[in-house]
Image (cartoon, rainbow, N blue to C red; front, side):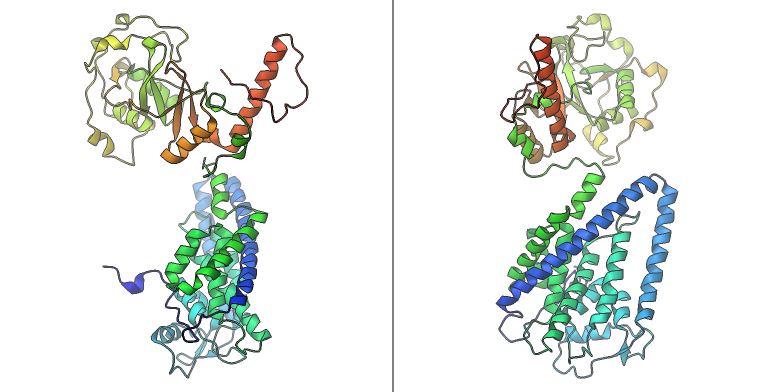
Length: 526
């Protein structure tokens, strides 16, 4: 059983005014302003981290030694800066003395304060208490530590929060992206809590602590949500996470308003940090909505599919052919076509499965089947290499040893690669029977299908590739996630228009020199 104290929580939020809420309705406007400021902070964080990541990709990430040295330098710099900040503060604050009406949670937070360069059990260093404690403890202190007096004598002062906030978020900007498992959730919460509590302090000083505004802990919670939302640009999920961590339903509306304001403000300047890194790493991530260019123009699967890069295999293939194919390309899946019928789709074979079969030498004897037993096939078939054969006359007979599926999947996810396979010269002419391992019911789409349908197939089924067939179920191309990105769709649109113009010029017609109108239909590439 998990210990409750070890679970991530913001502590217990108690009402400071009996049964009433900890904030006034009119303060929702202030929470919205804090959300806008958090969105601006998040946009600056994302822009700085993006520029730093681009520099790392160009100068550091290509060398393991440089990545290691970067970790050493950043760790040393963060350690020196974190240790120097309490020295720069150089002030000691007396511990609260009157804690009779304080609950156990608040008393435990007082005990967690750090007496760095101060008298133990009498004084504490405000900046050291935020840096030298665990991040979750520091967050709880910012959320629940009480204030007393106009001079903030028993809390974190405005100057201490200011001194902690800027260096800490600067360190988070530099650390995120180095070769260590560094997160973003807790650092953004802690820096945002310091920012929100700083805003609460400034409001209380303007009001001379007469009780007009909510306590600084409430503003710290809104600041944490604002900065986190400004970086990640998520609304509903963050609202649920923060609400579960607080355990208080009174903060539903303020959290939603703050996160929405942070997201809308941040989106004015750039995208969320996760979206930025997805694009920097060239990960073909498909958004939930179909790209606008696909909705605006009539694009079909035949226009966006890859035709020249399609590599096909026969149901029974030479081991040397499979080995050379895997060495020559990095495709993850290969269509298996029946060459006797001009390239009819038989199924698909994954790269991991092919590498496993080659490594386990699941070959048949070269003499078990002869090329002369096959009937020559259509020379225009997609896999015609002079060795096309009539595989239908083989029947159910297996031409190579059978490897059980549990043996193939046993090494998941560390499948062998083609570099792990040793192909002997006398094994190249052996037969590899792929029929027992082929996926004979792959997802396919017709070449005349709309691109919206292909996009939704990828999104709903989690596909990585989709075979494109004609009306005779012959493989004419393949679509991957990269082909459905907005940039790839725009390139396909341009290629289609250029092909249309070339076709008109080739027929003796005068081609237009201007760009086609948006209402013009697009050609279907054949």
